[in-house]
Length: 435
Image (cartoon, rainbow, N blue to C red; front, top):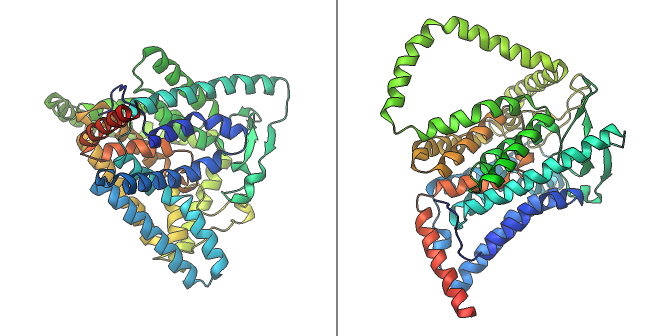
């Protein structure tokens, strides 16, 4: 898989690394949503152009799971169109929602597909993630001083907000935020809200951990941990404690002693199951009670989404998102949960279209995780997405998590080593011709 390599950068990989390094400058310029939404389509155009010019079919030798992601996200679009026709929402809303699909669910398929066909050097992505995390830590220290000096929370809102997104918060450049329940500062970094920052930092944590240089790896991991702590996302805090054990367990699945240990542990756990369940329930209650208003809003939004889906649009959903009542502070229905959001907007068919490739990818990467640490990292990334799918709407955050999707796509292709060798040889040949 991906070890440190000195072979020349292809155009596509250069674009990816530049876009990743430009995360913070793009955010400070109000361009991050545009960058994350457009880069997949730019990369796809470059790949198509390269295949036409060079006539090399190797750039489309993808994996079955990557093809499944493409078919599933295409089915999402069909569900969207059917719901718009069924509810007579009009051509204007249909076009707008189709553009929303292109900036949301379509990015899952595109980045995973691109990650599977491009011979990416994942160690370079790890290094870029370390730089982004270190810039996040520097931004945290600057914003802490800004809070201490009582400077304004928001610097400005980008005029590019007309391009869409979930609201002005996607284009708001902020130094820090305030938790309304506690009155204490809470950091969003370059995400639209704090829990989304926790998702991004947790994904980046696992990619930074694959950095080869010990100093950069340490700085990257420490910076990601700082971001997780300051964003005050309860799910991110939990994953900070659990994701590395999950990663190391997946690396040991080919060891017989692991299964012997599990076999000896299960009877003990059964004996103390009542105490364990009581401890888990108590922990969950403490987590929920730490932010009771947020927990109440999430529960009410889930109930509204389920009732509306079951009674009005069982198979194909409502097609669009609408704001909830005052009791949920007018939050969009399904906005705090990927699965409830899918049921409400795209129905049962849409939910299955996302669940099927996600679960199969999780199982496949777990099966192959012991083959290489990069694949185990890909498995950990899918685990993080699965966990956060129950607390966030992943669709509208696709523009932030695209490096993780590229990594997952690279790990889903069983012919990745072959692709890397082909492209390395071609790149060296191009270099010699240039000389």
